[in-house]
Amino acid sequence: MKKQIKEIYQMIRGNLRSLLLFEFFFRFIAGTLLVQVGTRGLKFCLDRAGYSYLTLANAWKFFLHPWTMLFVLVMTVLALFLNMIEIGGLVTAFSGAAYFCHPTLWEIFSGAFEKVRDELRHKNYRLFGMGMISTFTVNLFYLYRIFSRIKPVNFVIKELLDQPLAVSVLLLVFLLFLTLLFPAFFVFHGCMIGQKSYWDSRFESMELLRGAGHRSLVWWPCLRRG
Image (cartoon, rainbow, N blue to C red):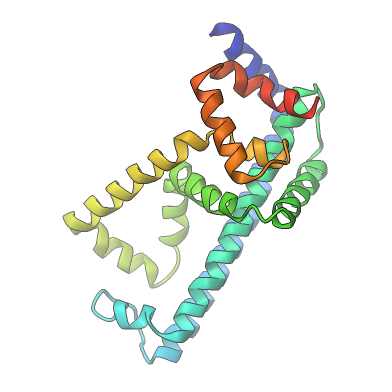
């Protein structure tokens, strides 16, 4: 176990500067974009629905309005795309480290876009959904900070968190996401590096989790490309 941990540490240390720069710039750009689009889009939809403010009382009618549904669709597609860019960048950085390479910030961003493009070409659309689940699970606090800055979503979030039933439902959803995510631990490497379909990558992920475990996490990207 100590050997595997040391290998992972060496991989991270070798690309630490590029990884930190990538995460900083990506999250700054993605966070700013989501907040700006979310704030302006909500104000536009509220105006079209005839409301001046969003509350729990009018939330149901508001979200069923055609403009709101279109806005939610646009935000979902944008979030899926940004999420896959981040995952593609991280996979690019770690797969390069497996070859003892040190990709630059530009190469990480370039590799991320290429990987997202390849997944769209291969029609691995389920990977985008799994990526969203992964991001929601890992970055729950970060997402809360983003949406709590979007008016009037921040007011609705505050009211929801004050209701025990809503908190219980959110906790159940979080546990469900964890259950779905664990068997797909290696699925992003399988699709983005191994160039496999989603289901083939998921099956291989489960096999790896049953077998080599931590050692597979270190060497599997290398083996898939070798």
